Amino acid sequence: GDSVTQTEGPVTVSESESLIINCTYSATSIAYPNLFWYVRYPGEGLQLLLKVITAGQKGSSRGFEATYNKETTSFHLQKASVQESDSAVYYCALGMQQGTGSKLSFGKGAKLTVSP
Amino acid sequence: GPKVLQIPSHQIIDMGQMVTLNCDPVSNHLYFYWYKQILGQQMEFLVNFYNGKVMEKSKLFKDQFSVERPDGSYFTLKIQPTALEDSAVYFCASSFLDKQYFGPGTRLTVL
Image (cartoon, rainbow over all chains, first blue to last red; front, top):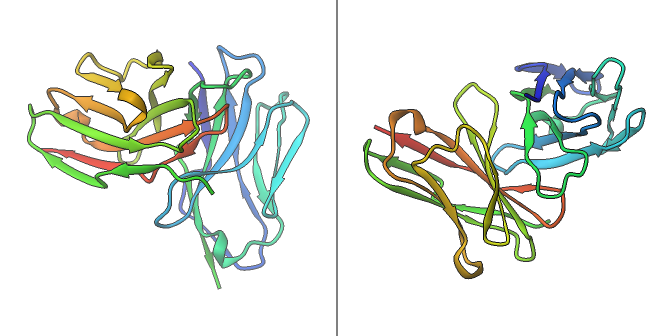
């Protein structure tokens, strides 16, 4: 089946340092999956951070970036300079190419703690 | 932004009893989902639902599970009877197209 493997937490980074959370995927039933990063801030529900549906493209949001690399089947999340407010749990996920109504497959999540 | 609500936030129940988990989706959404997360594991898809029908269910969606959304009210997940392995956090999601909005989860503890 389809699966996602990502850096598992906890990940601790000092404020203003750079961050990378690794994500690789295996999509046996989908040739070109849609790729997502979701984030859960403390006390809140899971929310979409960014999404990329085309191989080779980069998505960005709130200073975070991720590039869809079909050759290495990776979708690593990066940020050049993190802030305390970025402390949260980050989940990599994949979905069907024609994604309306279809399921998502998630990684285990990486808990990021940004220290002041 | 749009919010999905889940009621209750925590439910403790004895094995063999019935439980209903409630989800209040975003008002104009058309697709509804349930996911299950056991402690320390990834969130896994259970079922999705559209136009009054189940679209797809995973192998985790046992015969004891059922979903419904009568007349546009809550989207519910019913487990009857419950088993110890049903202890998990259950997340509801809804979408208009492919962007899913998630609720905060219901923690189910089966004793």
